[in-house]
Every structure is written in structure tokens, then in C-alpha cells.
Image 1 (cartoon, rainbow, N blue to C red):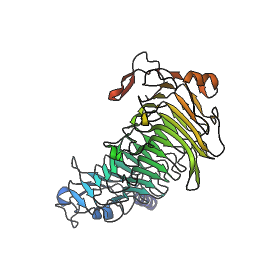
Image 2 (image 1 turned 30 degrees about the horizontal axis):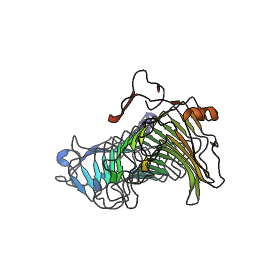
Image 3 (image 1 turned 120 degrees about the vertical axis):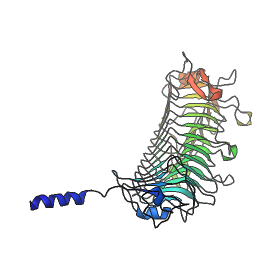
Image 4 (image 1 turned 135 degrees about the vertical axis):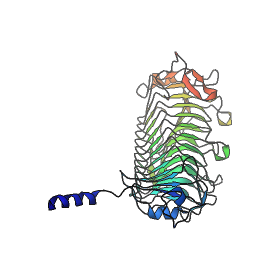
Length: 446
């Protein structure tokens, strides 16, 4: 009997406390209330931050919560996350923050934030942050997040991992005169997922991965600008951000602040760039680049660029750059559709592909492709009578080729590529489905 009672006591100790549901109402609540019903709501998020335990949910009523933060004092668990959620169809607005970010999950894990409008009327470096190695498995869902006077509405940093931002609108950030402002920054984070969001009006870029951010996924997002004053780049992979997946995104109406902004810039190794649709971008579509920055080498090596559709870019659909002793090498470019624009910047030819080795320390000659392979792609120009698709830039006079010429001259580098119209259904309306019988079947985004 004693053993049975002792066993039952041990089991009881092992069981988590029952999860509770709390309410916050900034207009009618009081922090002296129990918080356990709408009529007994707490007034402040500070009270919720102090009280919520693993498994608890806090519903926040509509209204403006100025100088307030979501900053839980403890983490949830895998089976019992801590949840902050908008109440019903209401849209609580978090603005200002007391210090630092408005949502701060520094070294917090298994926290869900759902359904808020989160913005800063004054300058914040960031609005939502997940940072530190103990910041993992958090979810930011269905929120509207902006920071017009800041530099990044959402930051995942310093070893934060397995966090998710999904179903959100993240927008309006940066300073044109500085070329700054990124909607989402992953700075030294790994295995995070950014999916099914609208990322727009980032003055520098919509998504920036840097400083060793690896094995992250940027998938099925819509990246764009509503105004050319905000039209930075799409996705930038720089400074050791290797082995990431950039897949299924629509990237459009960007790159007009300067003529060097790319839809996707890759300065790193082993990334997968697949199934993205890129259109109406002011400069380059996809650009592997290699150069030294701040004394650090960064090189586009061993990346897979596959099944992307690139349409109507102001400069090149594909732009390979190598500088100094850093070389863009051994990348595979397969089954993409690249359609040049009617006219490039400065009334120049909008090449489908430029391979630029002009700034290499050891000069290269046309025909040195550094192990890059182009296979099963479809290339086409809008301009009637245009034949040359590819330009090789080096220390001597630039050399241009058509696709058939390249494949005859360099069969180990250019294989089974086509120079045909892909026959999209209605590209002017951003419908890039292919008509029945299209010669581009099997290529392009799906």
C-alpha cells in the first residue's frame, strides 16, 4: 500500500500543472483581477509576461497597447507552448515598447505570438526579435509588423534556431538615403523558416541572411514593393550564409532604388534556389557574386539554381560576378526560364546572362566558366531580331554568343538549352503558366 501511494505521489509530481486561459484588456481590465475571464481581465501585458506558464494561453483584446511588450519571463515547452493571441476577430495593436523590441523572445523557446498588429511609430532597430541559442521553436503567426523609421521589423539572431514566421505581413522599413532597411534579417541563426508571408517595402532588401546563417528556409513568400522609393532587393545571402533553401517565392517590382539590386543575390555556398518566380525587377534576376567584403571572402560556389522563371528584368536575368581572387564556381543552373526585357538600362541590350570576370586579379579569358554548368534552360528575348543571349565580360573586348553557338563551342558547360519563346498564358498579368504545347515544358517555376 505504501509503495502504491509513493508511486502515485511521484506520478502526480511529474504531471505538469493544468494549463490556464487568461485575458488582457487594456481599456477595462485591472492587474489585480484573476485574469481568468473576460470580465476579470488583466490590464497590462507586463502582468501576462510575469504570470504565464507553459501551456497557458493569453487572449488580448483589441485596442492600442502603447509602451508595451510581449516578453515572457519563462519559456514554454514542446508539449505546452506559451501562447499570446488576439481575442476573436479583434486586432490588438502593440506600439512603442518600453525598451528594445516590442516582441522580445531573447533566449525564450516554444512561444507563439498570433494575430497582432505590431509597429513602431518611433525608431527601433527592430520590432520582433528572437535571439540567442535558447531562442528556438517560437512562432510568429498572422501578424502585421512594420517599422518605418527602423532597420528591420523582424530579427532572428545569435544562434536562434527552428523559429517560424508565417502568414505575416512584414513591411515598410529603412532609409533610402542610407540604402538600409530589411523586412526580415537572419543574423547567425539556423534552421529557421520564413514562409507564406508578404514581405514588402524593405529599402535594402526584403530578406537578408548574413554572418553564418545556415539551413534556413525562405519559402512561398510574396516579396515586392508598392513604391519605387522602397524598392530594394529581394533575398540577399551574404557572409557565410550557406546551405539555405530559397524556394517557391514570388519576387517582383523591386530593385529600382539603385540599378544594382537583385531579386536574389547569392554570395555563399551550397544553397538551393528553386521554383521562384521573378518579374519586373529593375536590375538582375538571380546573381551569384564572389568578392571580399570587410576582409572576408565570400564566394558563390556549389549552389543549385533550378526551375526558376525570370521575366522582364531591367538588366540581366542571370548575372555572374567574380572579383579579386574570389570566383563564382561550380554552380548548377538547370531548367530555368529566362526571358529578357525589351530594353535594358541606358538603352543597352538586356542580356539573358552576363558572366563578368573583369575585376579578377588573375585575368580570365572568354571560355573560362569555372566549373559552372548550364543545362536544360530556356532563354528568350522580347526584342525582335535579337540573337546574342550571353555576354562574357573580361579585360579585353566583351564577347557575345547565341545559345546554339555556346553549346557548339562549350558542350561541357552549356547542354540542352533552348532559345525559344516559352509561351506563357498572360505574362503581362503575371500569369507565367505555360500554354499547352509550350516548348519550355519541364523548365521554369511550377
